[in-house]
Amino acid sequence: MKSLLALGAVVLTTAALAWAGADAQPKAGGAPKPVITKAAKGEHCVEDTAYMRRNHMKLLNVHRDRTVLQGVRTKKHSLKACIDCHASEATGSVASAKEDFCVSCHSYAAVKIDCFDCHSTKPQSAAATTLPHAHPASAAAHVEELAGVSQ
Ligand code: HEC
Ligand code: HEC
Ligand code: HEC
Image (cartoon, rainbow, N blue to C red; front, side, top):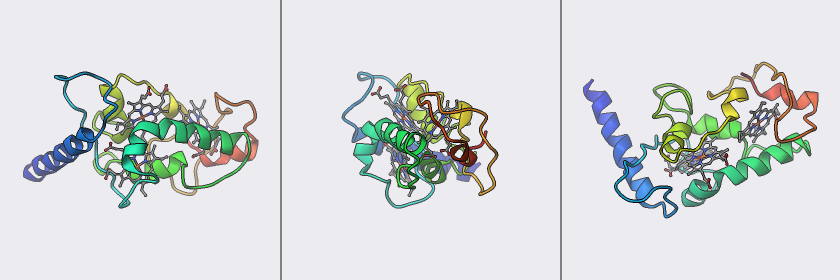
């Protein structure tokens, strides 16, 4: 229990510091700040943290289109890579508990994403099962391209 509390304090402090640096706050003063779980892996994000805070959705969209429409597979901005680093140590997921990385900010900012209807919220082993359907925002997901994502 003690160590849980200590962990909570560390996470809170980190989040407060991280959020203090954000200049694109979705809500005006007085509202509680989101608790942003620190990345479990990696010294740095795939881009500058401040840039990521504001532009991660654009990177994900571009990467999705490159993968699904153009069949170009790179790791750098892949959703799987985000999850590998950002899954919480407590739940092993980016979006199971309200403290989990992708949920913490989004619930604060009232953002809803459907990504995890299809994409796993947890780091995947090599043997992932196949998704049943194509990407919603794109017409041409090749069958082979479905192999990497699991429910
Ligand atoms: C190599 C590990 C790694 C990968 C891969 C990675 N990140 Fe990060 N990310 C980090 C680290 C480290 C930080 C700095 C803050 C921290 O320590 O949690 C960070 C910060 C962020 C932040 C800002 C959080 C804040 O405190 O304001 C966002 C948003 C973010 N990442 C989203 C993503 C997304 C989306 C992806 C996939 C496109 C991704 N990250 C991939 C390690 C990673
Ligand atoms: C209806 C199911 C579905 C939904 C909802 C969905 N995706 Fe996908 N996504 C797929 C499929 C299928 C692929 C292709 C499989 C692959 O590339 O591994 C894919 C591939 C991707 C890729 C490229 C592969 C990777 O791991 O980086 C990204 C990025 C991506 N999706 C992001 C998103 C984001 C962000 C959202 C939410 C805004 C989202 N997806 C919602 C089904 C879905
Ligand atoms: C530092 C806080 C923060 C974190 C952490 C974060 N997001 Fe976001 N995200 C936001 C905000 C704020 C928006 C809305 C931005 C806007 O509307 O311009 C957003 C929007 C999005 C969108 C676009 C939603 C839409 O309908 O336009 C996607 C997709 C997304 N985030 C994916 C992710 C994923 C996946 C993760 C975890 C890997 C994540 N985010 C982590 C703050 C965050």
